[in-house]
Length: 154
Length: 296
Image (cartoon, rainbow over the protein chains, first blue to last red):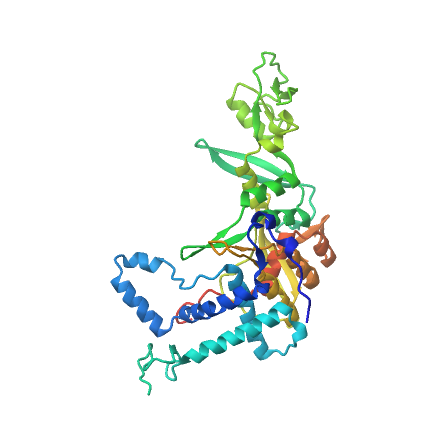
């Protein structure tokens, strides 16, 4: 496994924030564990499933100012940009691993740990969610019908 | 034929047009070509950060401080900043003697050509014809402190012009002339008030390893734990981008060095770091975010 680079010297304004700890997002596993589920939830919501679209349409119809409602970006779970970038990289590595073989030696320590956390969190997500066999929308496993196409499940 | 982009000119003249007090002016800033260390200083001073304010993501950078830092490093001269001298009755056929006292108390004297004379720069001749008081160029009037006297907004405008380089946007979908080993990246840049659009970088097609390294570099950022706005700090990626470029460049077109077309070695040694960075970013960005029109 490759040693991590020390990029501390490259931090802009590092000493400006020394009263608060600054850490490279890839190395902050505690925060990564905290933000990964939010990221996955956000990614699912951003995919604009039928259920999300319907909820949005309902909220818009009830809004006092529908134009303003449409112009305000809807960010359900704001994630620090540093983690959004890093999780995006981990997701890209995960996709890459489906088509290209690479060993642990090709990854940095942070990438290996991050990928492992991403896979765990994704497993956890799919334990509580399922995709509709008809329209492929993501629903809670406890749901009795698909929020997108309305298909009833047993 | 379009002029080539000189990689190592003796000076880069950057004209700036602006309005002040409802009137229109034009000045000229001359720079030496910025080196990698100059752009690094600029990037470090930018202090890029991203915060979450309400439900919005706010991107921040200290452009003024960064622009001033690099401007101070590379400026050679400014023209068009005319300091009015004290009226002197000894105007003769040759011109007028102007005197200005700088903050150190040193009196500066200069002969200003008559307004109907062909001598002098285009900048000094215009205001001289409007004002009865002869004028001196700022660097002549205040040789020790002229750099500090140039307004920050002018410095920012000049550096913004110097940093203008973009991937060219073809607009229309073209026939894909595929080369399994190489990719051409087309850039547009501005220099000296002129657009240079024929800038082509031929680069090796990046390997999976290089794509992985690139993704790693652009995904690295720092998190300020405990900040109320979930602040992230974005480090400069210029050093890594330049390294990628030097690894991957095969040839360039549209650039010259000492009057001859630039070679690969010239590009590695003399190419502006921002051109290298832009070429590498364009090389690695694969997906087109622009949707095709319906029915296309």
